[in-house]
Length: 404
Image (cartoon, rainbow, N blue to C red; front, side, top):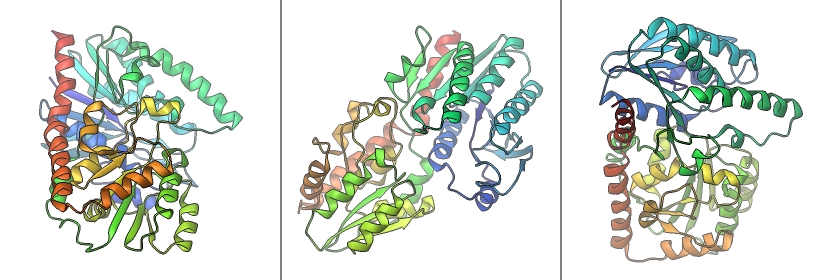
């Protein structure tokens, strides 16, 4: 059986060009997860990719008005298709839908096929919804990394009105979905999964990252205690708690390293001006980020359980953090499976004091052998259990059970 993957990943032969034309950062976390999913699927069957990459709109976010159709090779020389579109707000959604549907109609022949759709995105869902009307033997599997209602906090009235229309269309298109891959068990209620099969796959360890980490020497900072955060610098992700926690540690050998971009970047720069122990690196290439993760004393995810959205999300950095082999500190979050808490240090108090207390507890542990062993066990846990083969195998088993 051939698999078809519909998503928004960046073709590897075009990502440099896309990055050059982008005026803002690319969606690297989603791109990495999608490529990991494709690599896992290819272990079981040839997989054809149809991608309409996440690109900001012309002219403020991207230099090109139009994205052209093109083909690319991937995996075992399989063909992928970049779906072209008119890169203007709103019009891009319509053109993505039309062009994707046309391409799928051309490439998907009659017979039993499985199409994996990444994300609750109306152009993708609308295209496969229409396709299924003419191809009754299709199995549509929706992979849900986020719920759209929790992806933006905009209060703009026009935006909110358009989101209502989008939500109406999505609810209609979801009726064509045969099975689901969810990042959190809580997602099944708002998606109205009901009796349809689903499986929880919270994330996948990027095998390329593991390979790169093997060539990086571990922490060589001497007496320094380096606390590192990498990722989106959004206020709702707890970054201010981390800044306050670190600022209250009166020890000159401690340093806070922060990488990423987001709505707290300017505030972080102000903290760094007042405290020379704080280093803000801005947005770095992913290969540089994982080098810093390996060299740090401890990695911190300061996100708290405040907010309904935490039930429906799994921070992608958690698997990457654990995969680095560097000890990780985080709070308990409803979207994170219980098995992860045996491989990280948990700050039970969800405030700056609780974070400060746990950072000191870990960093002041003079038993370096114990810390390294803890990090090694966490790394082995994700390498053995969260790799592309083992995670995608859960999805394939669900599909096969449905078709049998």
